[in-house]
Length: 128
Image (cartoon, rainbow, N blue to C red; front, side, top):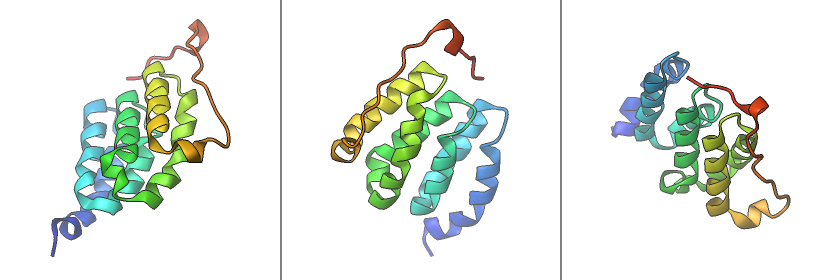
């Protein structure tokens, strides 16, 4: 039995911890799922909509980076969710999503282009 198989039962508890009001705990719970391989993808997808910007950023980084490249179908499925991050209230998340999408699959994204909106006073929201 591999680590992936033995760790899989912890996924529901880790997914629940991602809903924590503590940014560090939510991020660590999401990162702890990575050892389960493909089974971690739903937790990373959930991370894209987390209340904390650092969790959203890391979820996008893992899904679009080398880790996500192991699972090309799941990576492709993440693209629409990462595109939604282009409208995130946090500027760093918007910029990260822009950069991740540029490196991920330019041909897949050529069907429509988006630009990151510039922050204005009404778009600032503190994320804790």
